[in-house]
Image (cartoon, rainbow, N blue to C red):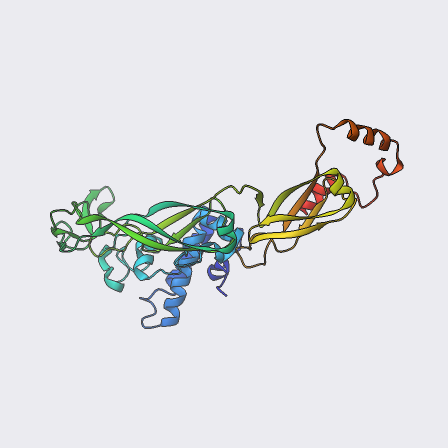
Length: 372
């Protein structure tokens, strides 16, 4: 089981954004590869801290994590930082380190000394619509994605403006003396390289538009509005950069008969007067197929029958929700002469007089039980 992100950073669940950032910086400096050369355990801790920070520093991802745990970011390449490498971490969170490793860079680790950084490609966003049955079972979708990739034959040369460092240094005279500032190179955008040669069909950055089929494994239990991530399936980045990510927004298609409420499902079952009085059996729809249920004689309208574990699987693996069947006794709007005579005769019969018992709960009690 994966470690809790809050525990990795050593903060409480109610920690503020500033506290989370401070805790991550402390962990990152403690386990930084420059400080622990050749220490695989320290490198693993460094990556875990980055993974935790990527989720907890983003309000939307943090909310999903608090609600669904690690399951919100798992399944066929989804993840917070589970697939992150050192380049990912330095590219996304390099500014967190400040000057902890000298000169505004990363102390020379992985070629990042002197401020040069690897650019990350832009993310792509798609929307995937799922039926309730697909959500209940989990599904693998093959989606065609248009993304920019580096064209074959594209070559790069060292940026002459920054000499490959990715930064330009300026010295200014101030009332406090001469001050040196370093900013991102305006020519190469901090990459340290510019396009030297490229094919005729490539754009100014050496990219071409391609269409690729991406396989997306969506875990059971996802909800409408949830966003999942496929690492490395966004647009490529110029030079020796790293690809962006594919962000997948989940849309839940309305079901004709079932209504979802969290992990539970609701089904409205209509029966006749005679079926309510005599009892019957009915075939009803579930997300895993049809089932037959027994209706006892004398059932009252508003009765709720609970079918255990016939709902939606919990995203965190805590079993399945239930299917709540709401029994509605249908009152006929038109009656024949014989039917009217029958009910007129029965109107004074003691068996037709309402006599609610303790187990016949009121509407408000049923609503309270449903949400408890």
